Image (cartoon, rainbow, N blue to C red; front, side, top):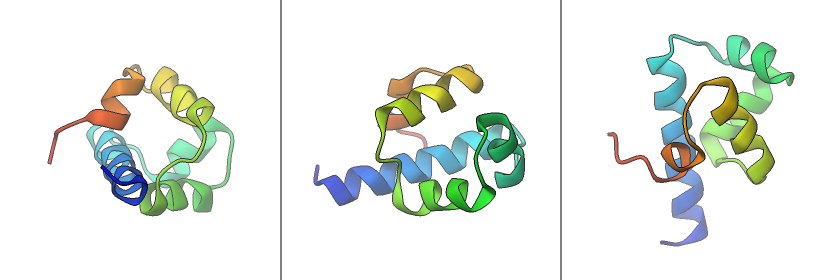
Length: 73
């Protein structure tokens, strides 16, 4: 899998996670401690830092692997 494909998959998985938890980008931003536009960029472009994915996973009670490798459509 190419890096761009992986980034898009991570972004899609994040979007699905946030929807499943009933959270808006603003909600996520408040929980994580960033700007909602940053959350939007993560969904569009993926996340470039593992530490960010770990933080999201911890705050949403999921595994890092679920964010990176989820097969949900």
